Length: 561
Image (cartoon, rainbow, N blue to C red; front, top):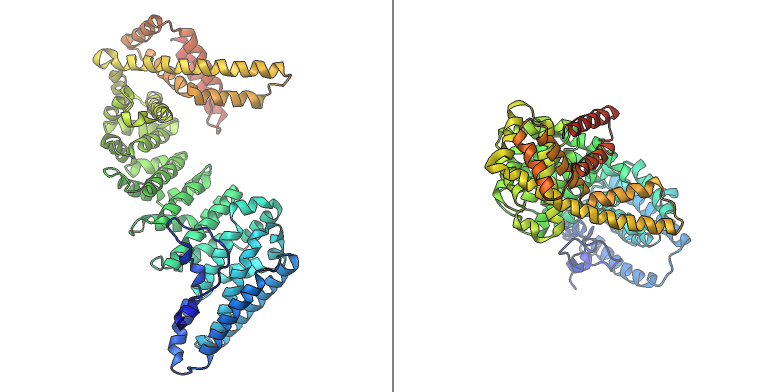
């Protein structure tokens, strides 16, 4: 075994989360600190062939023997305390020698190896989350966070590696109490800001440092899953800015870019403050630029497809916020989505979802008008008339496609005024009202699906009453959600479109709707009942005033149906 191998060799210290395609042999922990040490020792070898170099090599061999001796030792509270105390001593010693001899690496490199070793040994604490409180009580968390800015990036990466294992989501759930204490302490120490600062100095061309970035993102994902409330704080501590910068970096697609898109989508879930922050950082433009690649080309791999879906999810989340709808409009997002629908690539399904999010509700009015101006009706109505075959591979995709198309048309009918509204209504009269025929076909399809679901639910309710169980509001809400999922939501949209076009003042449309209802044994009463139920459950969760005015508008439409 030559000197280089000796320096790089470390005993196996336990498993870590591997990136896709990584092998155990490449575990960066096995090479930490050794790289930098080897570089400095090569420089000093000529001056002192038998001094530091010999001593450190002997120490590495001794460490190996010590590690073998320790393998059988049980891990308990006292051994963890001892380990933390050793870590604190080694950390202090390394810091002291680095300050004393900043230009003589040979003097502090041995302590760096010692420090690296104890950090590796501390991975065993991750198997005992009920002892996490010791890390906090003995100030080890504070010391570990301090090492994230250590001059030797190998030490910082070793700490990231340890934190990733300590915060593994399965481990956190093993001991909620220990997990709470650890996460509180990490957040108190501004962990996200320190992790972001560390990522900014890492060079992803070096495999170990790229792994460090990956594990950093894993820490953030673990903490966000355990405590979703920290997303706002994390985004504001520089994470959002770093993610956007990394996503738009002109480097080949890799596992880290995929992970960035995943973490970004997590940050934006159900969180208006992170959505606003993304908008302020021109994030809508970044998302649109990244997605524009998939306008004419399908993703090359399954991983790239997953990234594309994550970016679409992030965009949909952002469009829930009114101010971002305007940014989407100015960034020509409508034009891009419209092109994606025409190009018939993989991105088409998600583009439809984005349009739905961008046009729904009164905040979507400007987008609805622009959509008509860019000839979007020519794109959306062929999709309404026939669900593309690619969408038919699974029944769920079929329903999802029809839901988004109907929602876009319903949003247009609600929001369009003047000339644009006339253009929309004239689409329904084209080719002997073929679109009204398709509307009624879908109406009966979903009516049947909902009636089947209602039958099942009534049977369940009957059984519950028999068993003496109480049907409370929570159960009723659950049943309503199941009905929506079975197709009630699409049915409500279809009924809304029927009522809107019947009130348009074009008698031809109203006559056709009633004619088909009578022909197929349908009933105006059923449509009214569905719309009343829709009106009762309406509301965007923001304004009571909006809810009341919308309910009144729907009731007025029903009066003339």
